[in-house]
Length: 469
DNA sequence: AGAGGTAAACAGA
DNA sequence: TCTGTTTACCTCT
View 1 (spheres, rainbow, N blue to C red):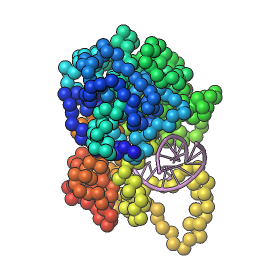
View 2: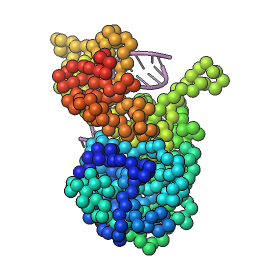
View 3: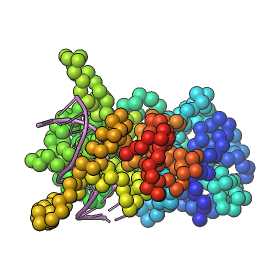
View 4: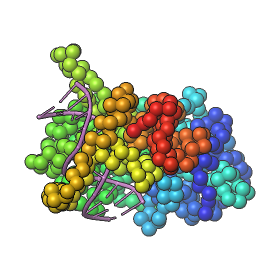
């Protein structure tokens, strides 16, 4: 098993001014079979040992070099070719829980590299890539076989194929990416990964924008109603695909259908009413869920715009983050479960504010609501369920910001994160490492730096000495 | 265990 | 009352 500690990736030195994820390992000789399983960082299938991918001579500036693309990113187009339902990918996330890899579509790129013959007109972010353990430090054996253990792997890029999208206009980028992933989910998958001497067909080898992360099923379609995810194809196949689609994806679809990828809450409600079964419900639970997802999912950003016609009025607008336009939306659950948060939640004596805030929910919980009330009514000691947390703290620290350890820092707070929110769990660890605070629970990031929600001893501390909640 | 849904407390506009 | 945030629970896989 390879040591896939992400530190090795994150601190890999940059070579030849190429972006971190576009380094190459030079070696000579003929292509060799890889002796290592290719690793997938996004859960998508990757090439197996008997799969070879050739890079055409025209695409290689130095034909004595074997290139590998080292960033663990999804490669939707090639994945379409490689996908083998019988192949179980090695999933990066499964080995590094909450340790998102530092892919960022906004990594600064040397402009000159954009025209590199290696890139052949593609921007680096457009180049499909996968992970190869070409960094010696990634390998347990010290890297002895780091270079020569894999074949001249790359991707069969057809330089004559002109369906590569080079537009940098955000909306079209996003649509290309999504549309392409849409194809991924719809197309029948070729089970023949061998591409040598094959002429790629447009069906399985176009080079539109690759989506760097798990493929969204929330891509727009002609009718604005959205596509069908692979999950839905197996799970629903029914009349209303949206019925089985999570709120986050539906909201994403709604926003994608808007001209500026933005809507006010009421417009989102309206979209749900028109396009989903959820919105047809008489209850208002779905609205609550929408608001919950908007708040909790980093793909959705709240902005303010002035009401047309009345410049004094402002309305809150929800807009898709750039990465969400390009890559789709991630699970809302994912954003609310950071490492620190997990630790925090496991503490036996959570902060008073946590004990009192929030309430039990869920369908079954509501069923037992009556039972609880009855129990309370016969209890001789009536305990107030709230009023001890935020109330007390706000009265004592009126200017304090009440951010939650569960709230991921916005990507703007993280240097180098660009527009990629997947930095934040890693960033939490970085702060822990930097501060030697491995034992501190609930470390999270604030505008002012790390905030230490609660230590194992139950003490509160923070970077500025004030308590955080 | 993770994803996703839901109810509900609570604050602010 | 609406909106936004947050928590805590639930079911399902």
